[in-house]
Amino acid sequence: MSAPTLSPSALLSPRPSAPRSGSRTVAPARSRTTIRTSQQVRIVPPDLKIADGTGASVFRVAAQRGPISRDIIAKVTGSSIATVNRQVSALLAAGLLRERADLVESGAIGRPRVPVEVDHERYLTVGIHIGAVTTGIVASDLRGRIIGAVEVPTPTVDQNLALASITASARAFAARWHRRTPLWVGVALGGRVDSVTGLADHPRLGWSGARVGAVVGGGFGLPVSVAAHVEAMAASELLLTRDRDAADLKGTSLYFYARETAGVALTFDGKVHTPAGGPGSISHLPTGSSASCACGATGCLEATVSDHAVAQRARADGILGDGDETTVQAVYRLARAGSAPAHDLLVERATVLGRTVGMLRDLFNPDRVILGGQAFTEYPAAVPHVADAFARSSTLPRKDIRITGFGNRVQAHAAGVVSLSSLYSDPLAAMRRAAG
Image (cartoon, rainbow, N blue to C red; front, side, top):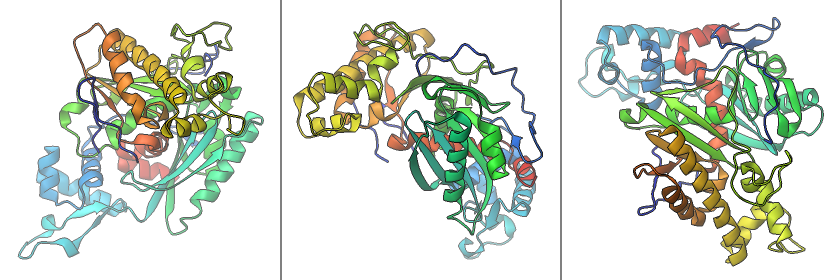
């Protein structure tokens, strides 16, 4: 899946498809060691990168290009045919790959000519994206394709009760696929996340030290991985985007997300940067707006551009009528129907976002800039204004920016990639962990 390019002169629309973090530090130095907080809970930090192990490379090629023959896998991965044969045999024995003898070309001789593919019908993984307003639950096959998704309101009760409720909903949803074996659970959420312990602080939800990994993993009895959601979105660009140029995996990328919250993540040479202290925050970057923030300041980024802020502004300015709900969706509907004030409000938000992305581009000077979230994908008519503001505010040489190819499903793919990252990093080791 390729991402459209966004520039002031040549613009392509995207394809359809918290106040400040708390001061409490929850993240010790990261480790790939599995943490067992009880006999039933296995918290495994996600591996948000393109792994270079032979098994991972073979599995990834089969997932993205299968059915595919072993000799083509060898050519793509740069491994010898003997090495590929050994890895394919091990992955077949583990039930991760299956042969497609029905696709052998007429006259072909020998098993290396028998195509293989990821067995996408035997297993599933469960991804959960806990948002400030809604929680998305997805079931993914081992190719990274979403086979089902549902959204529920994020509970506003005590954090432990909320996590228990989310876990129950996710278990009930996964049970629909009674012929598939669930292997892993992945959770992506905002705020400050410690992927080693599975703890999270989410100020927007009032969560502090929330035992995300323990509650969700214990509820499923499966290995669980927990990640900051914008880092997970950046990882989905690396691991789930098909047919991308290998050059796109080199160098640096800045991923900028905006919806109800705003955040950024960086990738370096095919690996998402995951700070030991948890992700940084751009919630309170100054924008120059007059919006009041809960922190007491004026003009903070999230207080200006979040869905809630846009809806409240529309209500205060009389854009929303008495019969309209105070939601950003109502603003989108009015703008699509031709309301000039609604359109202008969304353009104003797009301009603020473009300026902010330009400032961050100058700060980090990445090779690529990728935008994700419904603030960019829900109203394409505002997208050119993002590009214009970006171009005007950046002082570095001209650079195009792109909107994620996952469109409005970026949160779903973020949750999915957290549930799949260990399999994509070391598939055989992940299967041993899943077996308990």
